[in-house]
Amino acid sequence: MKDFIRDTEIEELLRKADSPDKKQILDIIEKSKELKGLAPEETALLLQTDDPELILAISETAREIKQRIYGNRLVLFAPLYIANYCSNNCLYCGFRKDNKELSRVSLTMEQIAEEVRAIEREGHKRLLMLCGEHLTRSSLDYFIEAIKTAYDTRTERGGEIRRINVEIAPMSVPDFKRLKAANIGTYVLFQETYHHKTYQTMHPTGPKADFARRLTAMHRAQEAGINDVGLGALFGLYDYRYEVLGLLIHARTLEADCGVGPHTISVPRLEPALNAPAAIKPPRPVSDEDFKKLVAVIRMAVPYTGMILSTRESPEIRTAVFELGISQISAGSRTNPGGYSENSSEGFRAAQFNLGDTRTTDEVIHDITKKGHIPSFCTACYRLGRTGGDFMDLAKPGLIQHFCRSNAMMTFKEYLMDYASPRTRKLGEQLLTRLLEETEKPETRRTLTERLERIEKGERDIFI
Ligand code: SF4
Image (cartoon, rainbow, N blue to C red; front, side, top):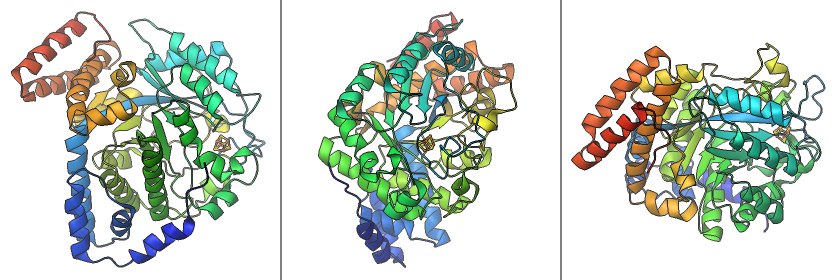
């Protein structure tokens, strides 16, 4: 598998889309409502639009698409960093090899279990497990043992991790097969930047300096049978319009070559990190307005690909972009290994980056509930094998909404019973009552009422 990103092709797309015609943009906006996605040429035209009236139309359309496909749900997860040793030197990352001030740690299995217990006690059921790239300090054997440890760790009141997504350095097909056998959910890997020259500057040494090895990792993962993969670009390294087109080309190439596109796209934006020059002073900062625009455009271009937003962003920005297309969010995050179970103020000295949203999980849940979103801890699709092409077959005719809404309500009920603060519980119960009333089909309403009552009586982990 060769490098399939051509800088000149993306630059040409953007050049041709410069100063777009209003009628053309309105036609593309209309076309996006068919939920069939957009071509790179069309996406480039939307990205080049600055007209406030058109930007408003783009935002409203993205909102409508998000609502039609995903409804009001927001799926929650917690990142779990298990080691911060790294043999790379990415200029934007606190874990970089040359950062001599970072407190390095590779958690033991007991420490990982302790972290997982702390995360479970916040109500999370879904993890994203991560580490730096280091042959000995975070080997694949170590990582696989950590996955098993996390799945095996239980706490009182039915606390358990039901699904572990992973973000780990690219590997060979046989190693991907081992990773798959460890029962992972999504394999996530960010290209960081799709612009070759910027990539080389940002990754001066280490295995990550190889652009093509990273770019083709998703193809190898698919070859190994991992049909659930997540892409991402780190916004702020290069022109955001270029990166969106890079993501889109990556997604389309995967779909054409492997029969299934990415399950998710992440949209991290640079945040300060200890001794990471590119994070402290981003080379191509993305304004809040452009950030909102890029989220909306991605929603229109790949409507069935979930979008993930981390706690890098402030609560205000997070609230603004949830409606524009975000479907998964992290909450209560720590980016330093050991950060959930320790009570130290030294976190930043071991962290990958600074957090923009430092609210607790319960505070985030309270705030999103107040805005009418349904916090979801659902992991049903992965456990029932509804992934890859099977997921898309359900998602495209809108069937996934049916499963997701019910599962979101049931897992939210569990959260309210087991972990919520009194004020969140009160608000959440009000939301569930309203959602039940709004459930159109009497049969679905009856079934949901009965299941919510079973959860109220102590039953757990009910899903469809
Ligand atoms: S971004 Fe990843 S690979 Fe690069 S220095 Fe940080 S942990 Fe290492």
